[in-house]
Amino acid sequence: GPGVYAEFEAHSGTPRGFVFGTGWARARPFFLERADQFRAAPPPEIESGDYTRAFDEVREFGRALSATRTADQTHLAFWWKEFCDSSMNRLARHLVAAEGLDLWAATRLFALIDAGIFDGYVSVFENKFHFNHWRPYTAIRWAENDGNPATAAEPDWDNTHHHTYAFPSYPSAHGTVCAAAMTLFARVFGDDYTFTMTTPEVERAGPMSPRVKMDPPERSFTSFSSAAKECALSRVYLGIHFRYDAEAGNELGRRIAEHAWHRFLVPQASASTIR
Image (cartoon, rainbow, N blue to C red):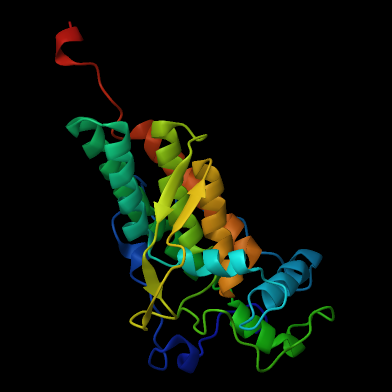
């Protein structure tokens, strides 16, 4: 029915009936007490104005040949494609060296970031299968039957990515885990921090597709929060997420990171000060 996730095996490159990520919600998290500890608010109703605006945005900005999407938006769409467990660890290595962190501080940073990313995946996939929300690829092609008179179907619509991941859309996993990592970086170094990230190359479409070099390979930011927002919105420009997926993912990632920061791996008084 309208709004419900449906697979397109030809577009996802997976066998009929295959859905990725169902096991994540059964994984044991590091910081969270349980997978459903943080529940995102529901996505907009299909008949609502919020849904219509998000639908129109991804249809135009995320289409394969878009006259609306800028060259920079196309660049960032692909540049952010790398899985966050790779890109965030590369950034962590850069920050450890740039700030001269000692062994203890560096170890703590990597533990926070990687456990935060892991818990982000646990939480977001639990949310995804709870809401079971459809992808833009499905929504735009099937809009004639969605019950919303303000949406227009395009049966041949394709996205920038030429690929749709084989799992539900809401919230964005990329937006979640990137925000979890960036929020923890902000807690360690302060949010207003100027830095440059490097992504040398990415897969052109889905997993194991041919790789393309990024030109340029660098993007610069003035805060960790602005980087998290750009990361999440990159999925709109790829045409694989609605804006509300991205925003809900960012919020979920922030909640996970704040929970971790205040409760785990908190520095203790040194032995010399204990009485």
